[in-house]
Image 1 (cartoon, rainbow, N blue to C red):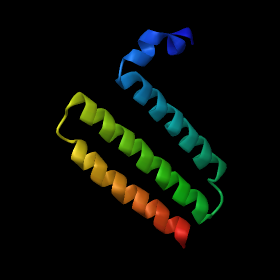
Image 2 (image 1 turned 180 degrees about the vertical axis):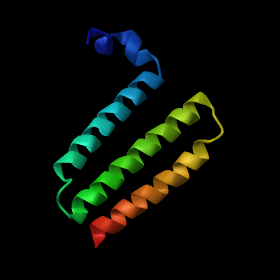
Image 3 (image 1 turned 120 degrees about the horizontal axis):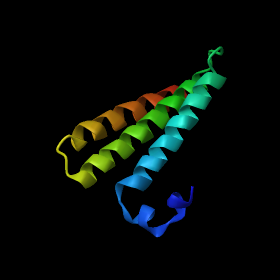
Length: 90
């Protein structure tokens, strides 16, 4: 736990991004299991927005590493966030 609080951990650019991804994934899994029995579109929209944010963070990570497939991740982000907003608006 102390390694998260050290300055060396936060100096590396990809580790905080990976930490945020894991926190969001764990939150999405908990939310999914809490709402597994229900048919509620609000939770479905929230889960799709969380998935869109996770995909956005993956695209940012690929942009930092200078991989060429970051555009694909940004397009997926727009799609997932659009689906989530559409579900939440209806």
